[in-house]
Length: 415
Ligand SMILES: [Zn+2]
Image (cartoon, rainbow, N blue to C red; front, side):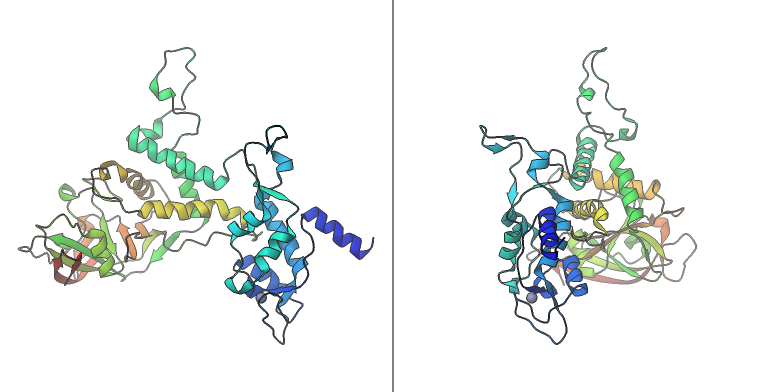
């Protein structure tokens, strides 16, 4: 078989047609395509950004199209394979396929200086229409998001305390209709908790926070009091532990932040004008703490990254979960149930989850409030917090320093 014929057959199989000219890695933002070009560069000049070098920096566009086709067909299918077609009904049924221009615009893989590249890529695949693989089913990532949403709905509005014992509903054939048989075409919603645990282990999200790391706690209080000890600035006593993001009322945990400003933003209640002072306690960890760290999730693998593609659904979900976990909740009355999902997640990771045979000591997550950074929730009770100099084996946090400030309610700050 001639080279030309073989080349044409490859194009047919992979669904693209030839676009001539070399392209460099700088013209792409996708890391997997960049790496492919760097490994397969044969030309010293890029046709698109006109960059040139003494060394090979650009790969032939046909090779790049062939590589891109592999990623595309991992994620997409052609409608001929999976959708019904009815001429009288106007063509493809159920899902409207995208053309290659829609697909490449959505993929967003070209950099700003790449000129004609986006159009050439779309032209290279213009003979095909595209639909997501299995267009009639949820994608794996959407399935995980759906399961999480179902779980949240169940524990917020249906069953909060015995959800882990709920049996799948039985068909109402041999007994009277019961409202609980209505929600049931899905697996038990708490499965998502176990799935989360597996994802945390698979992606090694339990990280060590080294001993002697500073964590800052802010307390808003009346101007005539002055918290100064670990008893005042550590985890609150159980009878005064109000509900919060990770803990229901009555269960004490220690909340803090990497920086003073974040501690203030996360704590400040603009409605509590009778509490016009704020005190910051800087506490140090007395030993290495093992935290579920959601602040440095691995990046979501590209569809062009063959080696890591199978990790993509779980990482799409974990990024979504991190955003949900830290989303601000307004104090408008709904906080009484809006915090329940994160409280249950925290309790699961505190009481049930193991990383190997290790328990974890808390969570590290990003605040989603404007201007705020990294937050900690440490599974520490008042007894686990101490003043510097009296550190025992049960202690996790020791108070190092205290700073008092007055709140300026006019601009939600302190001085
Ligand atoms: Zn270029």
